[in-house]
Amino acid sequence: NKSVALLGGKLDTLVLNHVIGAYSKGGYYKNYDMERLQWLFRVNFFSYVSMAQQSIDYLEESAGNIVVVGSAAGKMGLPNFGEYSSSKHALFGYFESLRLDFRKHG
Image 1: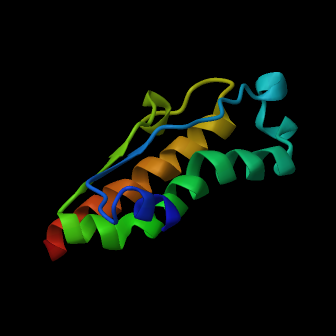
Image 2 (image 1 turned 60 degrees about the vertical axis):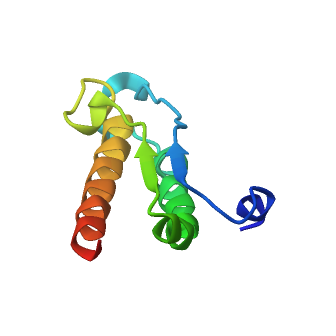
């Protein structure tokens, strides 16, 4: 909210474009470190959701847009990138649903 205030109280477009890539150690799901996986989801998924939620009122007011820069890994699994791909699948699913909600509510 402070950032939007610095912009004059108006937000037309929110661009979400940050990522942490993760090559799976050993490339095998049994080797996944759960703390690392949670950290990856905090950055690659939850931070996007948080910023979108904080911006929704401003974007509705201005009839603005959210631009999400994702990855092909959000559409298909990739060998040795299970952790990364799963975070991008979650991102795609969430924002696709949000897009449909926006369409429904104008």
